[in-house]
Length: 147
Length: 147
DNA sequence: CTTGGAAGGTTGAGCCCTCAACCACAGGGG
DNA sequence: CCCCTGTGGTTGAGGGCTCAACCTTCCAAG
Image (cartoon, rainbow over all chains, first blue to last red; front, side, top):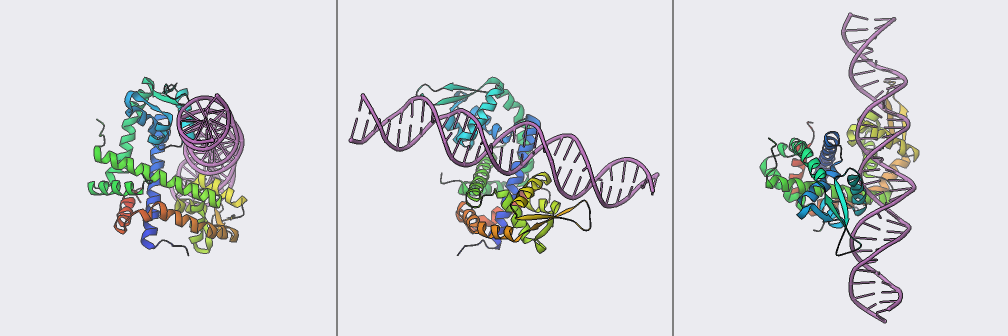
């Protein structure tokens, strides 16, 4: 009844699982140690920094950062307490809120970025050939939810 | 100074990150909903079930399941409380402990497995061509820590 | 022997996340 | 105009993970 995985699929799946968890762990540890924040918070800051005026509706930010609304809510509360993000009411929808990256938040991101990129290279990019990097992108995009 | 990522690398990295977190989330949600355990616990049961006599030293189990010792310790405590795993002293090293999968634990694993495999197919394997599955394995093995 | 460091494993505090319940507002149909 | 359903966002409880401190046992060097 169940369509089990064959040997190749099994091996690919296990290797992918191991690689992705070890990578996530390595990134989280580095950011936590060097910048005092988890990788998910870093991602929030990055997406905000790339948005026009460094501001984004909470729900748009959640989508951009690949976060649930609830998770983002907790995260932004934390980041706001550090003075890295501010929440403002949204003019055109009174239910909404806009998250704004503060100058302190931008500075914190600038401080954290080099070490993070270095780690991404060490753990991922520098271990792959350019062709593998391309293949990884295609495969990853195929895996991504329906769009 | 910092070697930033170029556009291709950036895109590959972000796609990979998004794919692996969404996959992990999907697996965790399915197992939590259908089997009442997180994916990491499932992995512990799997590795135990594959070991000779369904028993493994704690540290060996931690390595096999890709878990820190501390994490495994907490996990096994939980699994023991459910009656799925038992801890026995290790004959040849009085510091050590051996984790043993109980019959109930094995049964729980058998119940959980089909839904889990189905999910792995839906979210990963069935979205890739056989060639991509092979490529994914090679890439993942290249990413894995030093060996 | 004895001693000192290393390895096996556990523990508890604190943090982050999930899940479900919840409040406030939006906006179209009776 | 008034529901009534859907959307935006928050909250708190509960659970899993990390980190550092800790205890026990091993083992090798003196």
